[in-house]
Length: 143
Image 1: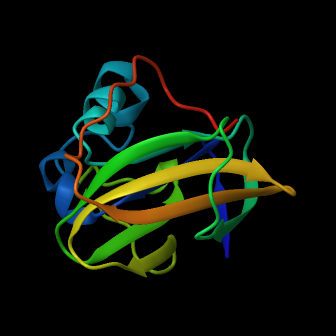
Image 2: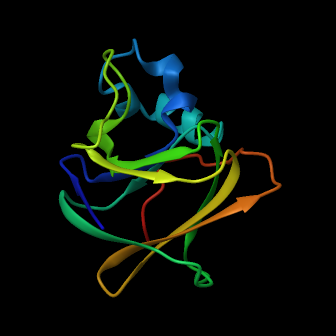
């Protein structure tokens, strides 16, 4: 699958987990404190890509390499949205099918690990019993 970004960022989240950001400005997440707060609360994953463009995304069950980045994230609705950072909920707008890809996953908490391989952004998304909390101090970037 392919995702396009004009903000050098790929995101993954359940729209139900960011309803509280709907009335914020569309670029609320460009304020590092707000971005990190939502990542660390397990509400969204923002992954810096280093550049704008179209990225090939592969979802795999392969074992991640040691240099991968890892997150826990909540899924309340049974769907994740995968798209460019500019598509995040805000300014009373939410993404739709024209903005990215909706992925069906049962509600629960997920461990998401991301890495670059063969020119692709590779994601391993697996159900976990862990709490959906992270401890990032700055914006995560794909290794």
